[in-house]
Structure formats: C-alpha cells, structure tokens
Image (cartoon, rainbow, N blue to C red; front, side, top):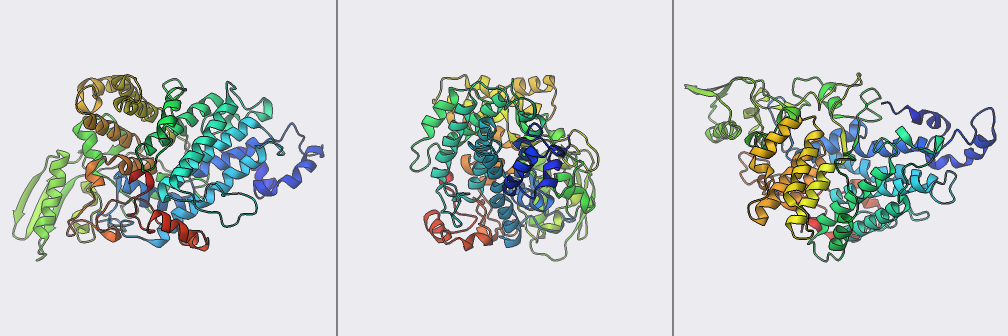
Length: 558
C-alpha cells in the first residue's frame, strides 16, 4: 500500500488549512476537478500516518531513544553502540525537543481534517468528523501520557495563540466526551459515504469501516477509564468503564486497529525501525539489542512470540581483561548473571588477567537495561539478541512486516479481564484473558497450535488461581508484552501498574547502571521541549503539576 492518494491535493495546496479559498474554483473549473472528484478523504492519510510513524528524525528520537528503552524493550550501551544505555536517563535537551516537537506539532494535521469535515465546512461529513474526534482522542491520550499537562481545551481555538495547560484529569474527561460524541454520531452507519465520500483505503487505521472506528473509540475510552481508576480526585473512571463494558469493543471479529507499514515511500515522510537499523550500517553503531526483562519473560514462559520479536545472539568467544579496574569482578559477574538469567549455556576460563566466556550461537540472551559508560565495554554486541528481521525490514521493498499499533483487540480483552478481576464487571476473567493472548499472538502470526500450547501449559496464561495482585500482575505483563513496538503504551503500563517490577523499581548500583538526572528512579514523563516555555501559561502548569523533570509523576501514576 502506498500513500499516493495524497498527491493530487498536495500539489494543489501547501496545507489543508490554506486550501479552502481554492475549492470553489476547483468545483466550477470543468477542465480540472468537479465536485464529484474532491473529498476530504484525500487529507485523511497525512493526519493519520504521522501520529504513529513520523519521519526518521522523530521516530529515532521519540520512539527508540526514549519510549522503547524506557519500556525496557530495547537497549543501547553495547560495546559497538554510539551511546551507553544511560542515554535519555540523563536528560538530553536535543533529543527531548525532537520528541516534543513531533507530538506538540501533530495536532495541526488532525485539526485540519476536522476543520474540513465539520458542520458547515467545505467538505462537511459528520462521519469523517467523528473519525477526527477519535483521532484527536488517540493523539491527546499519547500526548498527555508522555508529558502530563498540555493544552487541550484551548488547543487550536481560533484567536488563542497561547492556550492554557489542562490537567491530565480534565484532558481524560475531555477525550471521553469527544469519544462519546463520535460514537453517537456513527451509530449503526458503516461507511462515511459513497463514491468519493467513502474514505476507503485512504483510512489506513480501519479501512473506512465505521463500526471498527466505533469499537476503537470505545476501547480507548476503556483504556483511559482503567488508567484513571483510583487516581487522586478521580470522579469519572467507574462510569466510563461501566459504559465502555456495555458497548462493543475491539474483538476477535474486528481484529486490532493497526497501520500497515509502507517501506517504499520516503523515510522523511514516514519512518520505521529498519531505517535507523540500516541507514548507518549494521555493525552496531546505531543498532540496539533486546532488553533482558523482555527476553527473559518470554523465554522463561516458553512464549512463542520470542522468535517473532527477536533473533538469537551471534555468540562467540568474549575476552575480558582485568586492567586493574577495582570494579572489574563486579562487572564481570554482572555479565555472567545476565547469561544465567537468560538460561544460556556457556563455558568460562581464566588465564592470568584474562577471562574468556565462550557462548554458542543461537541462544536468546537479553541485555540488561540502563547500563552506564563504565559497563559499556562489558556489554558485547554479539553477546545479546537483536530485533527480528520482521521488525527491522529495510526500506525499498514492499513486504509484510510489523504493523504500527494503534490499539489492539488484545488490550480490549486484557482490560475486560482486569475489570472482572477487580469486581467491576461479572465477566469471565480467565476466558477474557485467554482471548487477549490469542489476539496478541495473531499480531505476530503465531500458529494456533502454539497459542493453544502456551495457554494450556504456561502459568503466565492462567489467572484462574492466585491472589488479586498476582492476577493483576499477569494481566499487566501481558499488556506490556503486547506493547512491543508500541513503546509509549508499554512505558505507560509500567508507570501505571508497576509491572514489570524490576523496571519500575529503577536502579541504585552506580557502578553498573546509569542513575542519571533521575538519580536512579524510573522515568515518569518526558520534560517539555524548550519551545514550551514561550507560552506564558507554562509556569502555571509547572506549579500545578510539579517540576519539569523526568521523575515527576503524572496524575494517573501518583
């Protein structure tokens, strides 16, 4: 699939907001386009693609340098990398500005589509407008869960150049109100129109299926309600959860809402992991390894997604020389512990000041997260697993590969299972949990037989026994696992639930780990970009939310 449907209008207009003066001429110029040829759908794709697959500059800095690593899924810091794995745990203004610039700037694309389709607009279409409200909800949930307080109620309002910052609680409530409006508008309608007014394949989230959009909206509503549940001053979560549980959610029939990757168009229009992986060579400099927390959890529970997520380590003979470093033995023991935790087979020999560890190829071994510069030389590139080829597809050939996750049917089932465990609903928690696992595995083409074996044999797939806390932990871990390649959401799961606990606990051993500007604590948010300070309402936001630091907890996580 190529996003070529944008080309006609891109040539006509610089941006959607500047095009309206030209439409009357287009509609009457019979040598050009007629009213039957034009539609707001040609502006839909650009408003969608940039939210989940921005250009390489943002994709690298926002997803890889921040969210995927905070989520514990990816690691730098191996001895071929440009960086230690302390990168971003120690605040870097340039990388944070890139992430902030992308997110704070994307709303204009969504608003442009809304302005074209709202009542009285040139391309008025209530169903496309409903889609814009749902996209707005997806956007602001990601935006506020990354930074906390952001402009919402006054964002994009004509005449307001310096909008106020809204609390996360108010943003959540505002999103739910928009979602309710969108779902009511859609009703039982299946398409946005006929002919040119059917968004069809220009809709790269749901293919123009309005009932799937409605399920997507309701699942987002459930996610927000469950996330807000129990937060200080929460006065809406239970009502939102109950309402969401009483309406259709993403399920086996609808499947997940995902965005198929396009590996033909320019990486400066829409990027992928493969762009970063291949653009600078594959000798490790810009490449990353797989986090030990993820690899060990998959491996310990014989999870069939392991080979879909990662490749085995290359292995080899690794020589470590004691050069009078007083912490040499501690760091060497750290490497050995990583091998032991992964269940790897290896042999170790000592000769004088050299210790050699021979690791056979073909084993899945995760790299510990957040290692510092002093540990850098001990983290050998070929010692650890790397992402699967399915994740690092090279641009230039249109092939099936990992999709960008919008919201999964797996999460819908996991959230329903959590609601059942908490006693909010009377659903079958185990049955819902199993359905979530099945939907999660479908994303990675795991065979039905392998899924059945996992559900039948693994304790990680069983919440029919155990305490409430033990059940909630398994649900949280499954949500975190399905968040692979959706680092922002996986990171939010850790902050919200505290699982995986080894990530949420942070680090304390400064001889091995990068304590950074967080002083070892787990990162709770990104700092605002430097441009945010130009808004005179910035100071009030900081006063209300807390210091503009990565360790400041957001409303839902306090």
